[in-house]
Image (cartoon, rainbow, N blue to C red; front, side, top):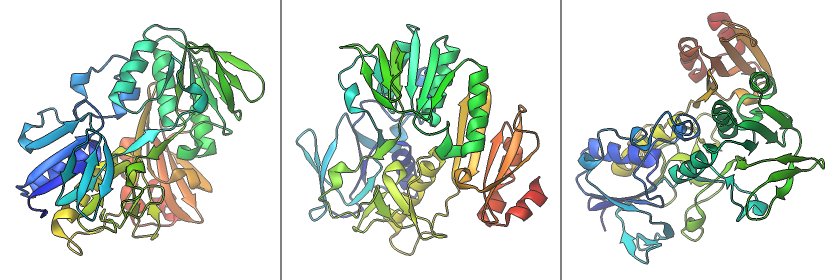
Length: 400
């Protein structure tokens, strides 16, 4: 089958939808088939741990396209899992038993949340990735009670803040020495952690989880230090893994995800990948990086679609500048670059203890990231300097 006849997009995620939009915007007139394991039409994930969980947004308000999807002329195969890729015959096997030929293929299957084996079959234990997950968690939290969050990353801390605002007693358990370490680093992570403690959220850091208490219904968790915490609900937020198990024998190069060049192209002809499932080459470092950010997924979907249509050497490399935001209580936190790996920090436009600040982050004398608390204009002013990889001294001089 020729690319002009049909393009299949596996994964109705942000990256997949942005890719479909880019295909149509480029004038692609062939058939587009979207395969998604989820039964819901594409929606925005960030509100699931925040506004949707608190009941401030309903399902109709989190669609990825408020004007609908009809103009994209897509055949949607919802509730269907891709189970195998036969690249030699340009064919995908589906969980329904059907096969689907493709001329071009975009893989945007995203990532799946990690769980803990002992949690299997216990009512009241939740993961949060999909809208279906969020429905279950929201329904449980509406009953009130005590919530234990395992994992103090962004998802865990967002859910902890939302649940506390709903009136629940909240404890966060983290095996690392502090919250948000992988995203913000030790000092900024502790700064945000202190804001949580001030509001009554209990943080238990530096201790792992040994198991769960309860039969059939969770009643608490057992910690590695021998103590126990009672719970009516538990959220496991300990990271994700890329959904590429169905690609093991496909011929695709896999390493912590699907290996791609800086335009989303894989080692197989007419196959691109984008979003959380993909490890794109960073043209500056020449290293492959898997970003799990909303902005990265959106940008990659567009570039990969253009690469699929245009072929080699016809699309500019995507030079990534990671951008992440999070709503934690009334704290509007946003970050650019890779602040967690910094070895020096300069705080300006406020102090760490104030309601607003901007933290500039450097590593080995180079400006590598910035974190803003309610400082969107100042943070945006860091973009060009980060893209130009200026010295930390220059960044401090010009911004701070």
